[in-house]
Each structure stands twice: as structure tokens, then as C-alpha cells.
Image 1 (cartoon, one colour):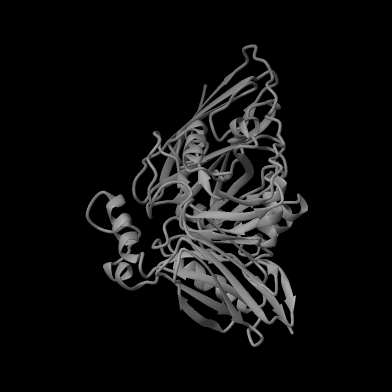
Image 2 (tube, one colour; image 1 turned 180 degrees about the vertical axis):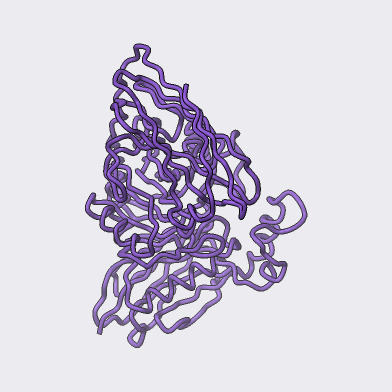
Length: 467
């Protein structure tokens, strides 16, 4: 057993938000245990992770052995098992590093103490989980949640509980994007099935921005320290055939890096009143500037240690619906990239799909003439048509199964649609406040926000227009 105590200052934090403490691992080691101790406080929060000798520095493709952020103060890595968030397997000899994320350091600095124990008892070498390729060979609208967490990062609940929550919600696909790690695949790879397809994901998590990586087997380096590192991230993801999506670009953690080449944007995260109008405004500006970015939604649900009943603050609020020729991970990823879908408030929320001259969402239409919206389950609410200049037209939705046309020969750059709660507004607000279970509003919301901010019930993806 080795004990290492290190002084950490705000100067260290300013120099690099990631602080490395090396330790030697001899040949024959089969298990490493690490415990972190520091005076945790409101102004003192330190994250925890590990790299083995193969780490080449940012951006590395090898050497990552785990990350638990601020959720744990201990981990183990063995040849046959590891703490959730950490990667079991071969333990190469040499200089390893405990990595500390200096999230909050007090003005006076702090001390961090590591206790490291190495063991060489005989253990098997367990393989990594193999990806499976389930397919449901039926075309149609499929629903899923593209952002949630387990105890492989900072949630309390197990993958098994999250799986049960997804089945309870009636989902067809689910992307589990634990923070800065991919070890949730120990469970989700072998349990993916035609009934519920699990999509590979990882949330790149830093102090000044979060992004989801979809459809990549390999871990992606999250240790961004410069605004321009966002471009390095995008290149790494795209080189591996994956998709990159900016998450919750709104308070309290907006995207403060340079905007890289992204495929998607999480326009709606959690319940609508959680500041999502800011994300939507930023999405609208990017589309108006000529960018082509698919809109997706995700609950960012952190599974608790029990299965909760359905409600406005659980998994799949919101839900992303995609039109797929078949249900498979590859089909989900392709539809996300193409924008073949819409976001709605829940698995049973309003349906909103649009076409332009018969072309689906995500398409490009030359010399467009007529847009058509198909709406279900939103009688008494409003349909709003929007182009690059802003709202074009709005109509009260007269029934729960309705179609409407709009002439778009003068529309600019793109056309998309939103459903705004009118008749349903009072019930939505009441359901939200009831779900809070106590007085006061979260996320620095004000009563005026609930009273006056338009509440979106569904958002379509755009159709792009050329003249």
C-alpha cells in the first residue's frame, strides 16, 4: 500500500483542469485499488479517474482506464472486474496515473491524499463485452431517449433499473451516455434486443460544455482544455464513424467552446420549462446562418436506485421519434444524422411530422411550394410554422387527427414546425409542479416563466429549401 499526499492550488487549476498523480505498477499486478480523500465542500470538488502507461496525452486513443467524476472516492481495476466507470482487463506494468479533475478548488488551495493498493493474486483475464446487432424488420415510427445515465457515472441506479424504466416507458431505442466512460456497455451490449435497441453513446463532460458521442465503440478523449479542442473532438468522432451532438446549450452548462462540425443538437433536454427555449433560440440562429443540424431530444435522466412511476420528470421526457425502415442501431444513427424525426414531450406526446412537396424532414427541396403538417393528439393547441426569418404562420389545431398545408414559395432557407401548448397548458404546468413534490421551483426558474413562457409540446426537424 502506498499513500501519496499532494497540495493543489488554483494556479494548478488554471494551468490545467486535469491534475495527474503518477504511481508505478510492477509486472504481475492483477488488481489496483485507489482511494481519494480530500476536504470536500461547496467550494472544493475533485473528480477522479485513471490512465495506464499507454496514455499519450490529449487526444489519446489508448490508456484510458476509467472515470467517475465526483460520484466516487474509490475505485478498483482488476483483470476480471472493475468499479462501474472503470475498465477491467490487462494491467500493463509501468507508470500509471490517477487523474484528478479540478472542478472546484478553494482560494486557499487544498490537499488530496491517495491510498493505492496493488495485488498480484491469480485472476482470470475477462474479455470486454461484444457488440450485438439486433434488428426489428418493420418500417415505421420508433421512439427513444437519446440521453440518460446509470451508476457507471453519476446516477444511483443500475443498468438493470434503467432497462426496466425504458420498457415501462414503451421505448424502442435508448442511448445511455454516461459521463466520460463507456463501461455501461458491459450490460447494454449483451442485452440489446429487437424489442429495445441500445445505442452506443458517451457524454463528453467538461466544466464549460457537454456533448454526446453516438455510434462509436471506442472511448473518446474528453480532456479538452482549449476552445479549439472542440474541433479535435469532432474530428476524432467522425474519423470513427460516429455522430457528435451538442448537449443542453442553455443554463446551467451551455456550450462555451468553439462550435465544431456537429451532426445533431440536443434542442430539448428534460421538461420543456427547464430553460429549453434558450436551446431552441440558439438552434434557430444556427439554422438561419445556414448550418444543417438535426434536432434531437433527451431526458438527461439519472436513473435513481428505484423504478419511479411515469411522470413529467422521468425517462423519455422528451422523446425523440424517428422514421426507420427497420429498427436497428445503424438505422437509428442514420435517421438521427438525416433529421428524419421529431421531438415530443413524452412517449405519448403529440405527433408532429412535416413534408414539403412530399419530401420528408431532413430533406432538401428546390423551388418548394407546399408544406404539409400531420398532427395528432394536440387539439386546442397551436401549430406554428417557422423559417430562417422567424414565425411564418400559426393555426389553432382543431382536432386530434389533423393535416394542414402552407404555401412556402417565399420561405427562407428552411421550414420547420412547433406545437405550442394552449388548451393543454394549465394541465402541463400543474403536472410539472405536482411532480416537484414541494414548494419552490428548480433551476432558478421564476413563477413568471411558468406563467408566460410558451411551452412547446413538439418540435419537427427542418426541411431545407433552395431557390
